[in-house]
Length: 499
Figure 1 (spheres, rainbow, N blue to C red):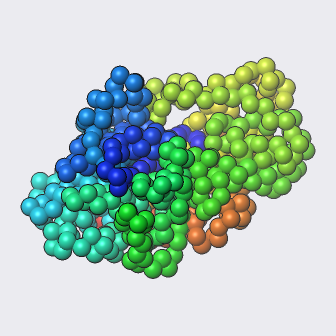
Figure 2 (cartoon, one colour; figure 1 turned 90 degrees about the vertical axis):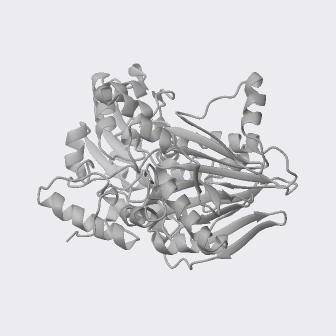
Figure 3 (spheres, one colour; figure 1 turned 180 degrees about the vertical axis):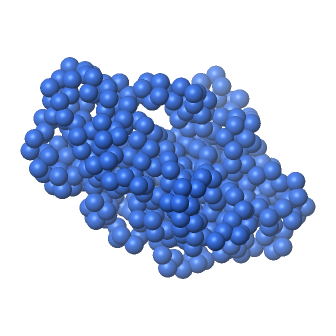
């Protein structure tokens, strides 16, 4: 992915009905999903009370001598975890710490904790409503909004299903949620459109039930994958399995298409298909769609690691050699961009290493999953030119991004997107490539095995699945075309009087 655009977040939760310690399962479930959020992590367990540990950066390795300390710190048979990349709230270090999940909320009558993946669009409206009950509420992340919303509803009526239904009706945006009540009930629900993945699984004996953003959270624990939670569905984990209730009919399904292109781990399953197999088909599609360029090429180069599977598919389709001469420095993380923003170019340059002698005099097809801002792409292409590449044709698996995201990807404005006003030919000039070649939307959809109207392509088509997001996008685009300043995360600004 160009520029390492982030998303919020990764979720894993589990309950052991034999009352044994759950933390090890939650820990490994989250370690398997650390790719979904590099900025912060947190764990919460329940043993009659909530026990919480939160911190910044990646989830740490736990040394053998530290195991008992962690088990003592996080006792209990129910637990939830989270990894986060902020797409709501502020980004200074103090705010990141305060916004680290899981989130908790408490009233005189109830207490609740949740882990959340997604992004709320009607943030301002929800903050105004919540301030009536929580007057000192300091907003740092959307998870806090949903958690407090649930707490307010549970104070009025202890019916958890009813509280979740109110969230689904009154909150616009993407939210895949798992949480624990003050009684130790483990539950999960998804917004009525189903933007973000959230699935269920159990161990072979059936005494441990779990929720996970991706199926790899189950794989690492040796659990079976049961089913993907439907949009608008509410679920409680019980000793007999999962109790399912379709609260709101999912008239429109819109799973984020970026999950297939970039966010999900290749060994996870989405819509019943392994993500790596879908990405291989992306590469085959590109080979078929741009066969004339393929005829003149010598080598396929992938920008690791999310484009490696597509490169393999392109290699299979075309017979061209795939040369793995680029390598990513895996411990240069996204957080470096926040803390060292003044060294942005240098940081980007450090992320990708290129083996030079393979490129001299060659006509290259460089395959990547997407182009967002163009910074990383330009740096890498310039390095390849200096190392002797003759021609460089970019093959991009995700269609051209022309608009912001309101549902959990850190793309907030038109101005920051290189594709918002430029055609592929113009983008090629900016990034120093000979051509930029995007996969078609139809080709992308066919590869996923889903229908076009089951995926969200708002950032590609400008057509957003929810009404306020569409209104905001239209207003932003009018201002952008007229040369007005963009405000960044528009969903965090009071928009009541927009015209």
